[in-house]
Length: 90
Image (cartoon, rainbow, N blue to C red; front, side):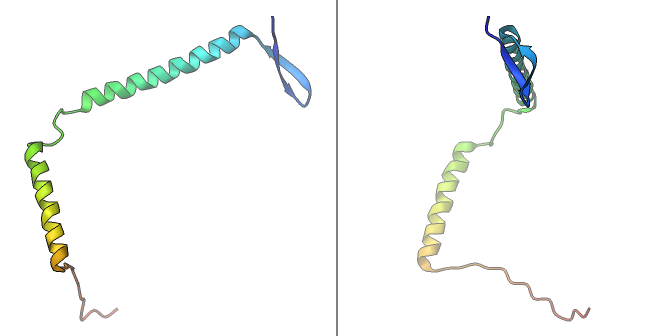
């Protein structure tokens, strides 16, 4: 049987046997599956099912908005917001 030794500064300590390594692997996979199960359960329980109401109409409106923005850019229109504070003495 093969033995793997963990050594600290050349001193072998606690041999790891094949069975122990296999159990570490199985335990790690079990932890991953348990965490994934928690995430899936939370996702299913908290999802309302509705992402966007009337998604087709919103998609069509999105295309129209893009077209309008393209036209606005072609015309050279620009928008901006300026705020001027006056009469403030500190």
